[in-house]
Length: 137
Image (cartoon, rainbow, N blue to C red; front, top):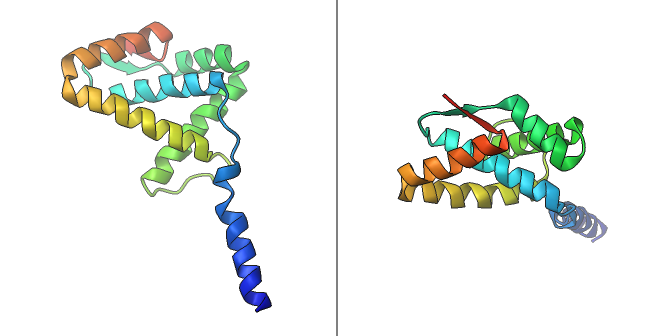
């Protein structure tokens, strides 16, 4: 009986981990939304756009207070992508709240890009350029 209770206690503690995850701050949520949107533009191969890595870190640093905070969010998003794809990732960098928010944004933006690729690529791509996440070529 003690063994069963210990297993249940461990499972309850493990299962409650994501529920106890810290919510994203407004700045984190905004930066993540913009980061994910730019990545979907690239994933959907919108013509004329490429990543601006330095610009992304600069934007994140302005929004989150430091380049280190920007890189932490970028790393958390990268870990979320790898986890979703079943690839190995650094569990220290994985944040369930980032994964959840990124998934919602990804599905919304991708649906827009599939529904009207020309208009959505222009709109989302130009917004990414304006923010410094993307470059036009």
